[in-house]
Length: 59
Image (tube, rainbow, N blue to C red; front, side, top):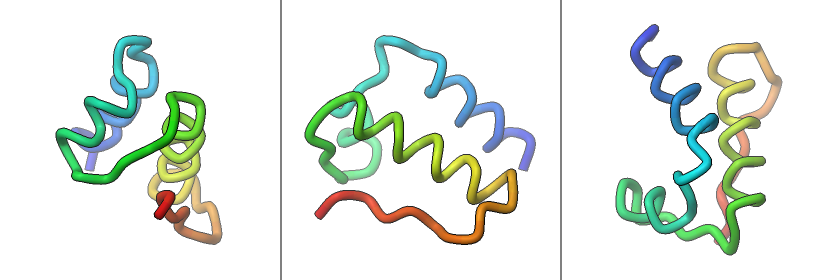
């Protein structure tokens, strides 16, 4: 689990990581970097900080 946590932290702090890179990894499209980073922060909180609900990516 530490590897997943550190991976999340790394991509959230990487200013060059954006929607195109995420889409290549997951096949999920995001309209812009801000939306992607909001989703990643919410997913991080869900996985590691006991947020009550898993975020859903845009359709």
